[in-house]
Amino acid sequence: MHSHYVGRFAPSPTGPLHFGSLVSALASYLDAKANKGTWLLRIEDVDETRCKSSYTQAIIECLSSYQLISDQPIILQSQRTHLYQAYLDRLIKQNLAFPCNCTRQTLNAMQGKHLNVCDSNIEQPHSWRLVIQEGLFQCIDPIQGNLHFSLNRLTTCPVLKRKDELFSYQLAVVIDDNKQGITHIVRGADLLDTTDTQLYLYHLFGWPPPSMAHIPLILDPNKQKISKQNHACALPYGNLSVLKAALSYLHIPDTGSQTIQETLEHALIHWSFTPLKNQKTLDIHEKHAYLAHQNTV
Image (cartoon, rainbow, N blue to C red; front, side, top):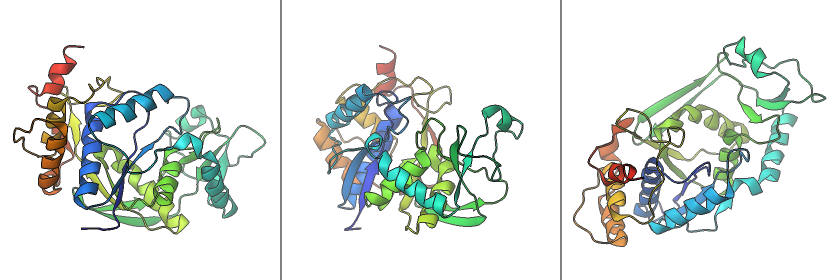
């Protein structure tokens, strides 16, 4: 048990909550509560071109209908840009970030990669990119095992702030997790590809990274990740069958509970990372109530 445990679920409001998001929310919630910790909800709306306040409200209401309620006031990234700028300025002063005037067309010539500091200036439209230094980072994931991430001269320099003045997910998520005291992150395996940059940023800021666990992705019958990009159906509010279907992907058996509260209490008793170990994807079962719901909309 971790008496200091602070976990979080941090959706982006680019659409309504879907089944895959519910599975991730449940995994982070159950792990926090099983460790007698605090569970936070953060809205990652830093990309204001894609996020909508109506989706923010819908996500909060939908989670509440499944009794997944933040233990502290909900933070919106769109209200924290001053904080991100302060830490970007810190990297700039340390020569760890550089301006970039490169366009998508120029990057196409390098297969989309930006491997070195470029000859750019701040007098023209520019983004800010992170200087990549060689390094090896390790993450002991209780689901995926012992993970190693290597940064080298072939690693692209990620964008920290775009030309349109919007901050990147990579910078914002690291700052917010540190400032909120997040000690444990449970999220989907699709975010494994972001882990190397995040561990590198923790290193540059001198912050200890949180423990990270990556749950298997849920694939639809077409073997595609259930996501907004793949037109995942919006979740119904407070649907017991949908909740039980989501919990089944976390290997929590149904014991005939009749309410959402009873179902969550039962899930806490049976919660464990062990059945999920070394899996990156899980196929959805066609008989689940969620798919039946999809077919009616």
